[in-house]
Length: 301
Image 1 (spheres, helix red, strand yellow):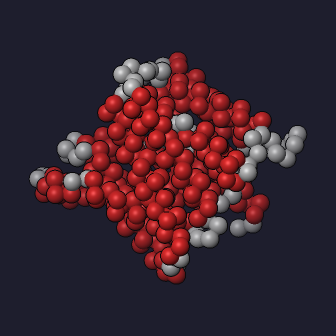
Image 2: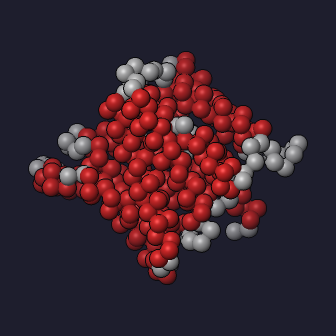
Image 3: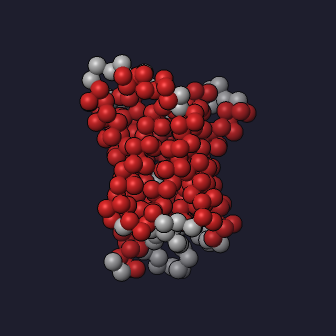
């Protein structure tokens, strides 16, 4: 694939990732009915995803398992500092405040990505990026709902932590892709995330819930589907997109996720579509369109 084709398909990969991430609510709600805690659901998801990524890498390129020892801190940062950290912070935030407020704090991630991209990659803050960032964040606020009930300083810091951790994947992932394939990056990211999750998921309790299930076969199949749909496909697509899309731009495009989650909530769970949510969806779509308009004025815009 040529560089020009990569630049065109990159945003499509990011949008695809956001769409799959947006379906997470379906799977998390179903697994919750089996009694799994949020952290246990995280552990199931990242562990099975790690196994699937490893299988893909084994089939596609076994040499991809070779990484430099000095790059282990980079993959630790991706696994622990990004995937595991942001997920734990997000689920903790959900227990400390309303779902809508937790979602809004999570989607401060494009702001952190843009700041880190300027500091580490010297990306330019073009007019289009700033407009798209404002539209995307406003859209996420409207889609998630505006609520600050029960907010505390600790809750605020935990919620912002989820956004920073979420954004860190774009930064560290971009650095890792300079040396490794997307398959190697995602495999080791999830291997480290899975290892960390087993420390905090109370595995004995988790296995007891599996053994107590009356439909163990279906549960295992559903867990595998959860990992495939909400982790393997979207993270691989997002990482592939990062090869040709700037980290700051990718972070903004990925805000399509809450829009998709809202649409799924309406279709699957018969949740109402409010005027605010509808306006928020339009703002997010506008941000994505602005970022992908042909640069007709100046190259940096």
